[in-house]
Image 1 (tube, helix red, strand yellow):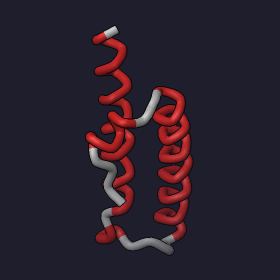
Image 2 (cartoon, one colour):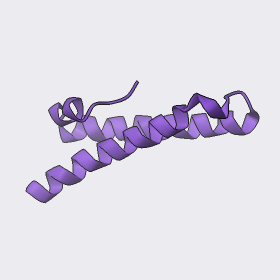
Image 3 (tube, helix red, strand yellow):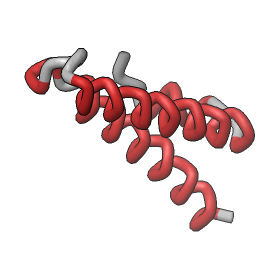
Image 4 (cartoon, one colour):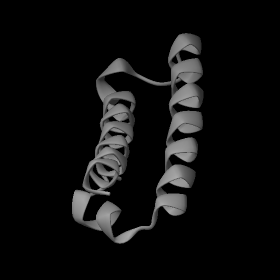
Length: 67
């Protein structure tokens, strides 16, 4: 589930912060699963989650610099 920047820009700051917390907890869960071996390295979900976090942070920083 890749987040599109256009979708993120439609959200307000509180929704973005909530999404960021959700994604960070998801990343922790995925990393734990990876350590246990229940998730394959070739699945790419960890990379996708990290990139989604970066997208959310980018949108938040864009808004901070504009204001």
